[in-house]
Image (cartoon, rainbow, N blue to C red; front, side):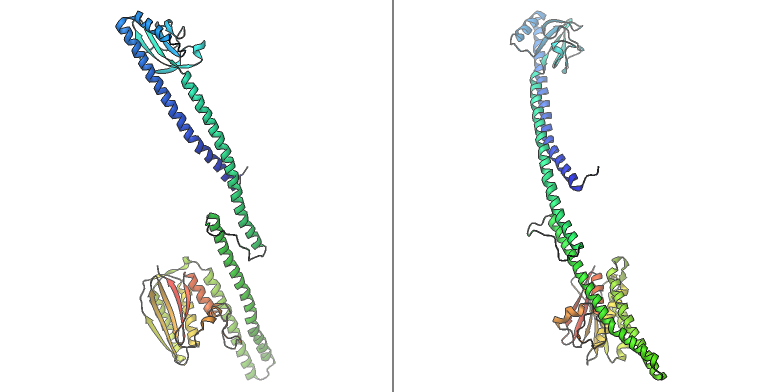
Length: 448
């Protein structure tokens, strides 16, 4: 059976609670166990040396008296006996027969007898040779076992409490996580059903992981909503802007078919070619915009900004001269080569130069300028035309945005949209400014 993520998180919480409760209790049990054994060892060694000293000073008879005096204290756990080499008790307290290996003095914990009452519990003892026999002295583990059972009960209760606490914590955690995830899933379902305005509720000031996730989802939905809006605008604009040239195409085609005069037919066909070029150019720009938005940085290559702008100036100088426009190249900076999509960036700059040639104004002057600021470089195209008022810049950036409501001037309103898409591809932006008079259009790219 495959467990859900929340169920696995709940089990992890339960295990964590168990471990957190078990570790300190186990440490306490281990420490207490070691202390009890060490205390038993010290008492046994002291008792064994004391009885052996009596035997060395006064003989075995005095040892028997000392053992009997120790038994008089009515200590039921006391082990103090004189045994022969086969383990048979000759005097003292202990089983009648010791089923242990009689070796040199060393503290051990074993059962002293194989059967009978002394076989029920272990004892800590030392066996020491005295004359022809052995002195076995020590103590049964009654007290230590009692303490051990107390610790074991505490350990069990601690584990039970930790287990119950883990279950409660797991349930609370599962419910909390499920509720927060359901909120995101419900929003995603609503958006998928067409409610693009739905957003994940994000608490102000809390800023936990789910709120950060909700913020990212909302940002993604904002972008999707914006792109969907742009797609609708593009669709409407394409339909609107293509309707006129296609109508003109039809009219010129019909005129060419109806014309009997060859000159009139040639004029109609020439107009037909012109209208076809307009539609083709419009579709080409749309494809360039889509291409720039779909491109990735893997298609970038190292290129020198100054060389790119110089090549563009050399390309457009003859065209500018034909139009009576003076084109200046101003390299105010010479930044080192950087990753660029050379083809798309050249196309975007060419669009800016084309716009400047159409709107250069009576002064007929265009400046291609390369500047560098803190952490960024600017490819600027400056002209002395009418410029774009600040309140109309958003419309100028929009696809099919036209500053001429009557659309009496040529153009499809796609040039700046392409430039802005290329700037975004490079992680930069398109700046439009006043050249007093004229327009400064700049592609601003981050350096490095």
